[in-house]
Image 1 (cartoon, rainbow over the protein chains, first blue to last red):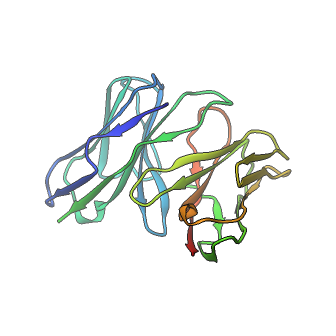
Image 2: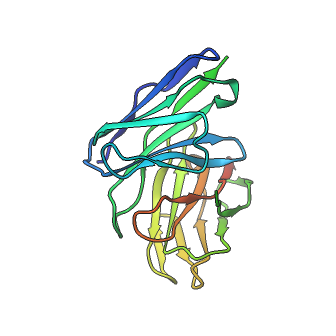
Amino acid sequence: DVKVTQSSRYLVKRTGEKVFLECVQDMDHENMFWYRQDPGLGLRLIYFSYDVKMKEKGDIPEGYSVSREKKERFSLILESASTNQTSMYLCASSYPGLPKDTQYFGPGTRLTVL
Amino acid sequence: GQQLNQSPQSMFIQEGEDVSMNCTSSSIFNTWLWYKQDPGEGPVLLIALYKAGELTSNGRLTAQFGITRKDSFLNISASIPSDVGIYFCAGQKWGNTPLVFGKGTRLSVIA
């Protein structure tokens, strides 16, 4: 079974702090993704990566950055956390190419910024 | 960014009833996926559809890939309390591009 793990289930940070959210997958997937989920807005793509040291902006990259130094690990960084970044953050991974290109999600990190 | 139009936004149904939800798009997608998210968890893949017209079942769940490639629906038969959660549709235009998600359908089942 594919396993995607996220470093924390719940996180509380203060405005202005630098926040690191870590995601690790154990299935040698090339692709990794970061989403945020807010009520009524569904899943919105922040950043994604198709390979080590490679990153692409998603739909809402402002205020975030990412790092992919190893294939299995994809980190989301909030350089200076703000209250409007309070959200559920979901990491996902996939193996490229049809018909197997389906995403597997981690359990999510619920981040509260005070 | 683009999002799929998913409806209904929420549903309250009696246990044992059938459920239907759908997803539409103004553009063509070559893969349609349906995910379920339990409270406090990440989404889990239910059904994947890869061909226009395809009808696929997974237990009490049935999903179809629309002929026009612009829509998909999910049916749940004889609902049970553990069907509660948020159901998301997702589409992919071609291989190795990010998925586009709907906003979700929140299902509540009344015993």
